[in-house]
Picture 1: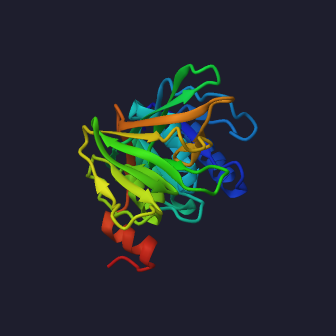
Picture 2: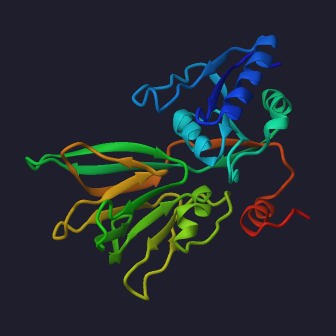
Picture 3: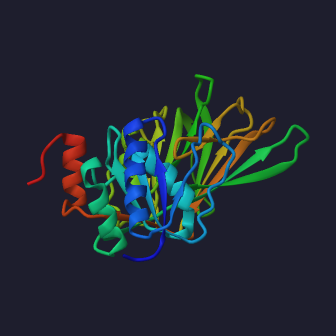
Length: 287
C-alpha cells in the first residue's frame, strides 16, 4: 500500500454517501493510510480545504460532488476517483459495493488515468465608483453566461484570441471543456466531444438568430464574453454551476482559457467513452 494521504469528499446530504466514506476511512486507517475529510460546504461555505500532502482524492456522490472535488484539487493534478451515490454518475467510475477495491486499485496504480482539460476563468467586475476588478475561478465543466434573475435577452460580444466573432442576442452562452460537453453545453445543443480534445466547446444558448452555431477552439485560444453595457447589466456568470459574484458590483466581461493543469480522473472500467455516452444518454447497455 502506497503511504499517501487520501482526501475524502462526500455529499453530506446523502447518509449513504457519508456512511460509505466512513467505511473507507476505517479500512484506510487499518492499512496505515492517513485520511483527511473535506468539510461540509453548507455548514462551512467559506472554509478552504488544504490539499497539502494529499496523493489521492475520493468523491462520494454524483457528478455534482465530483465537480466539487475537482474544484478542491484544482490544477494540482492530484488523482481523483469518483464513487457514485448520485443520479447521473457519468464522471464517477464505481458504485458503493466497489469502494474498497476501487481505492485499493487507485493506491496501487492499477487504474486508467484520464487527463481532463480544465478552464481558467477570469471575470471582470465594475464597482459603483467605476473601478474594475477581477475574480479568478477554476472549472472542470464550463463557464456559462445567463440572464440571471431577469427574463429578457442578453446582448453580448464573443471574441476568440482577440478576434471579434459576433454580437449575440439570446439567453446566454456556454464555454465548455470536452468533459463539460456532456453537461450544459449538450443541453444547449452542442456536440459531445471526446475527452482527448483539449480545446473549448462554445455554444450559444437560445440565440435569437438562425445563424449562430456551436464552434470549437484550439487548446491555446482565449474566449472572451463581453456584456453590452447599453442593456441592463444584471447578468450572471457561472463556473461549473456556481455563481461568480461580487457584492455591489456588476460583471462586465469573462475571459476563458485552458487551465494550467489538467484534472487526473481515474477509471477502473473497461467501458469506453462512447459506451458510457450510449449507456448514460441513450439508456443502452454496453456491448
